[in-house]
Image (cartoon, rainbow, N blue to C red):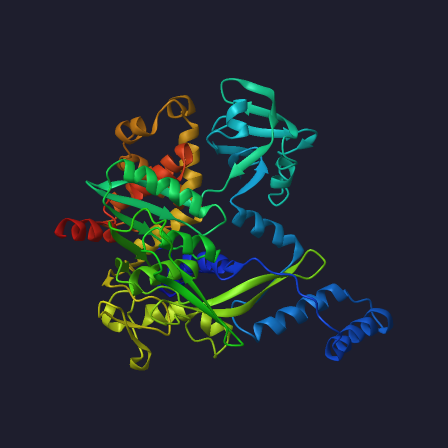
Length: 527
């Protein structure tokens, strides 16, 4: 085994870092403008910065001093009050708006060129004839290839104003170099990864975050499933770190009857704001299953809590992250901002699911490792609850507060070294690099396939899987598969499908033989 056992917790916690990092920052409502009066404490800080700026013996970057000061102040409040520098704010805001202005391609720097993984369906590049496998050499007069290719600046060269044009110089195997004009347009950032009929009358919807467009995407998905005769639905919120609260409330409204409490918030003054369901729900009678895991946080927990507390559905999986704080974004006047915790939210029964953070941020964010060590990820009996935080639903179900949503039906996590390492390979990009090279050997064949043809005709065999292992060995990575070769082949095929067609078919392939999905299908048949 190329990986030492001591690194196993790192692999186990990798997905948590990504999902909750975003979710912990993005759970906020629209800010209202506030005016602040003169404060001598603030004036003291201003004077100190001026003294350093003008009188200190050495040249000092006072901007960096301010950022360090702001970060230290916020760190002493709670783990989710954070400072966002101006250079990061645009990207985060863009991600949560649900779209951006660009040419509509997924790409990564492959060797020394920008290689197109796929084009966004209906987007500017697809309309202009760009295909998967194309290399983008130039954008207007900017060269995008060479040994000194810098990744961070690439996106800005391809972005621009809405309806502005960019001339691309493209290399395509079998065709050579050609120029094409692309008109920039709105490119959607999907938060609904997949929606399809899972089994008989059971539908499935996978949601990766709660952005401005999430509810609209979800409503389109649920309506299509209803048109197909679906009577029960699975809402998959695994690894969904949260985002905006409003879409989660609207989603819950689709399942809850009129005037049912969805959740409420309470601020420092004790002011309570209740959020109730309306009479607009389109799925108020069908059975609901919600999938959660240790990376499901924030708005995901609001939705799961509303379903669970109102006895509306069954929560399946593992205890969720435990973020019950609400942030609001506040501009600092120089393009940067803070996201400041302004209230706590509570589930309908009155539960706060915020886990403790009194021992500092480091222990707070490392709490996942404690779950791993105490066996909670494998055994429901290892979940620690406080009898003092016991609540009861209208139907008599006992629930607990104080740290995440505890599922109604527990499903253990595969924490074997090989299983976790294989999953890490899928998510880290190692697998994507190998698959891109293999697809690139026969682009004409793959680009002409439909999703259905791909699923039926493309077989990932042992030779293809062994090729991936050799690809890793050449890069200094050794994995002993033992009984995991079938899982490896499934992951490889899913990655191929994702590069060719997007996330929908990827999720369908990954979900085959998924332990949580199988559990829900079994429950659905029993009922």
